[in-house]
Length: 267
Image 1 (cartoon, rainbow, N blue to C red):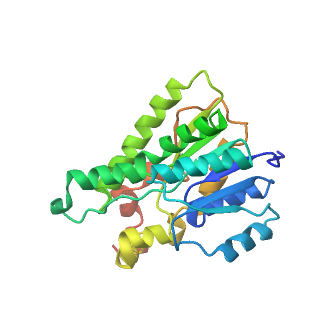
Image 2 (cartoon, rainbow, N blue to C red):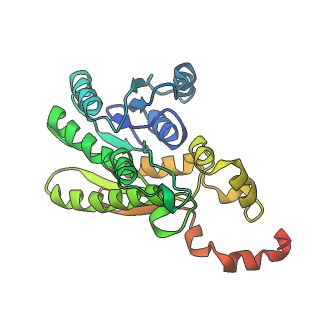
């Protein structure tokens, strides 16, 4: 299979590290022009530009923009329309939610702030892009997690935001079903990124490693390849779906799996 994204304009929120950067590089290998957003102080621009040179991709456009800020989203969409006139592939990757240590951390404000920074930006970007470029991106790919379906420590508001995001995605895809836009969600199992460490901490990772090997973790590149496939045009019959990228491990993860490996792990 040969891909040509030399005419593709790619927008990735939170695109300067982790899954976002890996996805941008996956598209850049095939010639895509990447626009990467990031929050202030979170990107080493020289290092990022070098990564694009290393894969032979066009130099990216790096933009400081807070996905939770409506004015910045609208301004960026206007600048994109002026510079490129379109966005072909939109990857919604950036999100931020309040971490919950106990029931005392529950608050209406905290929940709404989490929704505002994690669930709503995807749709604000889509609406802003349609407003300024007169059409939706051909492909919208939303990064989520398995949080809504399984307990994860401190993840209460994150999981709630992901659940809202996935539900709205299905409804929005239905409402724009007559338009040439494919909206899908990618879920992944845990990936060892800066975000993972800041969310769960090194102590949790050390505990987890007693029960799983490093190979248990997914990689950013595996998720990026799935995102590349969804934006390739070969999967355009897939619309409004939540796709789990986990090497099939969701089926086998659990106490029974640990029991089968009890001798290996000294349990």
